[in-house]
Image 1 (cartoon, helix red, strand yellow):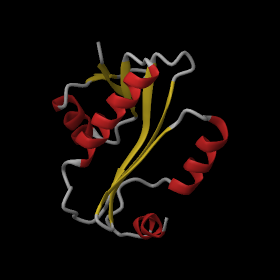
Image 2 (cartoon, rainbow, N blue to C red; image 1 turned 90 degrees about the vertical axis):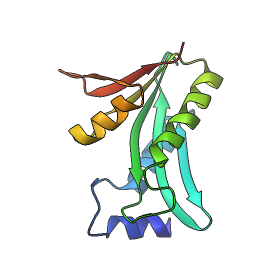
Image 3 (cartoon, rainbow, N blue to C red; image 1 turned 30 degrees about the horizontal axis):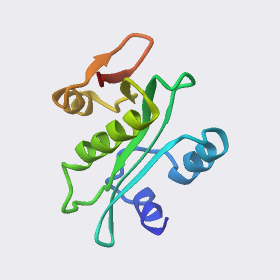
Length: 131
């Protein structure tokens, strides 16, 4: 948690949400939540948080946060997160992954390059079928 606290005070921080707040909330509400921390030796590179939908047919990735500093895994953490999420989705029988609320067009395009399709309008997520 010390490294995450450092991220929250970092001047290059792009996402303004408190990891500790959301982890505590998800822990209380979603027992089958998806939590992932990606480390390179002792350097935290990325964290993510999500949950299955109520019918378990989809896995939502609600938050993906990469280190605001350059790491040896910079540019690779989303790929690793999606790979682990696909594995978790398979275990729970989910047929789809959704990355919720991409923060901007550049991020959305990155997800689309990874095989996701953007769904706009009232919804705001990128989706990938796992069939």
